[in-house]
Structures are given as C-alpha cells and as structure tokens.
Amino acid sequence: MEIGLISVDRWTQGSQAYFLTHLHSDCTQGLTSTWARGLLFCSRLTAKLLPFKFPALNLSLLRLLEIGYWNSFSLISPSSRENIVVQVMAIDAHHCPGAVMLLFRGEFGCLLYTGDFRWETSSDRAKTGTTTLIKALKDNVVDILYLDNTFCNPSFDFPSRQVAAQQVVEIIASHPNHDIIIGIDTLGKEELLLHVSRVLNIKIWVWPERLHTMHLLGFHDIFTTNTSLTRVRAVPRYSFSIETLEGLNTMRPTIGIMPSGLPWVVKPHKGDDNLFGSLLTARYNRRKWNANDGAKIDKPNDNLGYVERFHKYIYSVPYSDHSCFMEIEEFIKLVQPTNIKGIVSSSSCYVDPLYYFGRLCAGNQPSLRLHCRPERKVGGERVVSVQTKSNIGISKSTMASRRKKSRTKLDFLGVHGSKVNALRRVQRGAKIAQSECSS
Image (cartoon, rainbow, N blue to C red; front, side, top):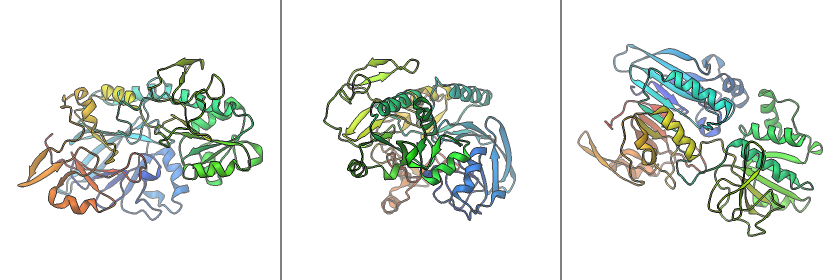
C-alpha cells in the first residue's frame, strides 16, 4: 500500500482515510474537536461516544463500520492518481466498548490490525469473533499481522476476566466493614463493575463524567454519583495511589483494588501470607479460581496471574483487557499470518513477536533474538533495524536526533508508528504505507 492512503490511531497529516480502533486516550492523541483532515472510520459504538469526548467534532466526517461486514471505499493513488478500492472489515476486539480490529484487503494484499485486543477463546463473545474472522479469511492470507504485543512474554499468564472479576468480588466480600475503591480508566472495565454489582447486589459510585459514559452505554440503574448509596467506588486510575489510600484510612477503613495485567507496584506487602481466610492469598501462597464453580485450586507459588497484596491497603488483581501470552499464541495459530509486527513499543520491555511466534507464521519467519540490530542498505545508506521497541528502520545518521524527540517514529514493513511505553501507553498508531523491506 502506498504512503499517504491510510492511518490507524494516528492523526498526523498525510493520509486520505483515518481509522480509530477505540477511544482510549493513547489512540486519540492528535485528534481534536476541530478535526478536518479526512474521513474518520470507526465502529458504531465509538461514534456514539465520540461527541462526548470531542463535542464540536464534525460528524459528517464519520463513517461507521458495522462489525462483521465488509466496507468498500475508494482512495486516490498519490503516484498514479488512479482510484484504489480498499475493503475493510471491523471485528470485535473484546477490549473496551466500541473497540475493533481492522482487516484490510485490496490490490496491496491483506493486512490485519488488532489494535488493543483480548482473545479469550472460552467466552461466547470470542467464539463469535473467531467465526467472523475465519469467514473473513476464507479466501485471504494475512500478509502482515499488526499485533497488540503488550503482554508478548511467557511471564504474563493471567486468568480470564470472568475469573479475575470473581476475585474482586471475594476481596470486597472479605472486607464487609471497609470502603472499597477500584481504579479504572475513562472507558473499559464495565463488565467487571457490572459483575461486582450483580453478585453483591450493590450500586457503584463513579465520577460524573464516567456516569454520563455509563448512560451512553445503556447502564442507567447500577451506577451513581451519590456516595451515601454505596461503599464501593470506581475512581480514575490516575487518582489511585498509596497516598490516597493512606489518607482515606485516616477517616474510614478503606482498601483499594487495581485491576490490571501489569503489576501496579513492584514491592509486595510483607504481611500475613494467608489473607482473610481461605479465599484470598498473597503472592507467596496463591490460589486460582475455577471459572465454573469458584472452587479454589492450589497452584505453585511462582505462577503469575493471581491476587497480590502489594500494600496493606492495596490489592492488584490480574483483570486485563489485553491478551496474555497464551491467548496471543492461540490467535496467531488461527490467523497464520505471513509476517507479524508489534504495535506496542517500549525500550525497556519490548520483545519482537517473531521471537516467540515466527515459527507459527505461514511464511515460517525465523525467530529473532531478543535484542538484535540487523543491518541493511537503502539507497546506499546503511540502516539499522532495532528490535527493542525504539527506532526501527531508521538510519544511523538521523537516529541520534530522533531520540531527542518525545515522539519517535517507527518505520517497519509498511508502518509508521509512534513510540509507546507498555507500562504507560502515551501514544501509538500507524500509517499503513509501502514497505522498504523485503522481509
């Protein structure tokens, strides 16, 4: 695909069509209420939420993508000035409300951009998504899979969201005399809160803007802004801290729960390993919950994906809206792409997906080393490809200056992206463009 046609979750100039996978802030940096650079494609639910986040947005620029259906649109080739027909299908990404994967096909081949996604193969929702994807790929081979590689490491082995949600319920039930705060984002984790409300038969407090979002999503009776109606509060993630919990405990007994696939803090609380009876356990004596009946199953202490008490007031629960390593592997086995490129970059923890999954590609890509710097020549100039989530495909002559910029562009196999830290995802996105590489 030529440069200047399509951008995904990236809002700089130079493309004819722009795609938004979901409404998290790391995907909308650069998008404003005065947007006028081109058509904006998104799911129907995302389009419903957009005016709340961008009140003056020109809605005539929106193009809705119905999940599971092919959509065709024409673009103009920057080189030949001829019309190019592109087809795209939105597929449920199982991440947050409105989140979709994007499957593109045309004369350029077939590309699948997952955006942020959770591929829980056991859920009915994922089974529907699997069926949709299999049908869509019936006559297509995915040339490049642009993959959410947030947890592309075998260390990340956490349970399904159903199991993790029950862990949250048990923590709350084990603290009947405590106020509870749960750290969440401005969008996402709704199913967790609904589960807590349903099982414990309680309302949940949210801040006013979040209540409006809940109403847009169709949840009218479960959430409230009246603190006197409930002891469970869902608060913005940025306000969740040890200092906040310590301050709240000077007034009332309060515990905090951080639902995340990433450990919230590094140092665990060195208290009683067996917390509050047989239901909850600390990181050195953990138990896993069965998704069907809630029975506890003892697991070895070195496994990840269990409730951890990092502070006397704070629990970390592995409720993640991103796929764990095993789920990523199952997804790649299903798609069987020719090549894979990670869309999440971090200089500290990046692993090229080909390192683990190259053997699963239809093209049988070689497994790369964790940190390799293969060199190639482009136009007579030596270029270094860095497999560490920093500058990929950037010449040595420009690498030093680009490192000084807060937005470091990535240039790999047809995609310009932005440097993203996996722990604090500030910016991401890609311009689908012609590749300079043959591999």
